[in-house]
Image 1 (cartoon, rainbow, N blue to C red):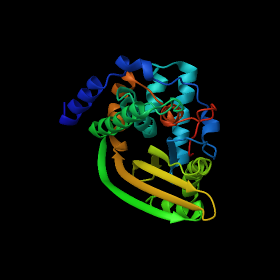
Image 2 (image 1 turned 30 degrees about the horizontal axis):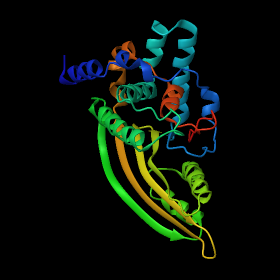
Image 3 (image 1 turned 120 degrees about the vertical axis):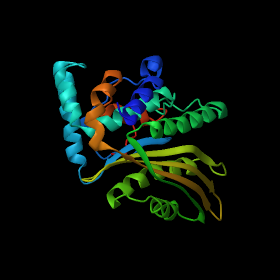
Image 4 (image 1 turned 30 degrees about the vertical axis):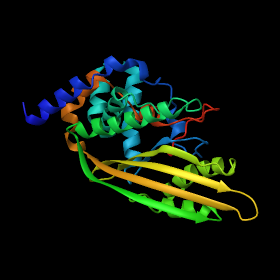
Length: 288
């Protein structure tokens, strides 16, 4: 047994999802609808995005696992075999395990949050990232911070400039991120002279390419202040913490059975778990 084998066994033992069943999200998400372009609703602070030149192939492989699951059952050989050749399912499963055991659940409504619960959410989020990086199939590529401050008469100017801070994102996908920032700007405009802040405004991005699958976390702190009156001022303070992690997809088949014995999360389950809904609606805010 290699050192990596031991690391995976240890990771799965320490991160036993059966001890954290209370915060798992229901498997009731419609993948077909989730993969359509949607405009995120107000108060979204976390969402998922799948991009890349092989994203369609990854989604097809995911759907093969989903079909096997629906036809043959959770622990069938058909599910195991289809999952072995679906690295995207390996990544979403590992991410979901890390989320569950970290008590990080952005899918819970935020309308009744106070400072204490927001702080707990931040702690859980940081633990989630730590646990992701502890998995032997996940390798840190880069991690850095960017800051942006602007006083402007137009939210659009600030939003356009902020979207350009995101590296490795296509123009089409930048438009989706702009939509989510616009929702926050609209919330700020409705509260004149009151800062509208999101402590964690996180985009969880899976980039599927021929060479690799990359998981990117754009964790942002955004404050937007609108001052109405004769001289209308819009102020934006934005901090972006950007982390790029490589998923070793070529080794997934080696560990797929062991991981699936503990947990299985398809793309739609992953999206449901990390996407914060509107406090007044059941619509999920997925940037896909």
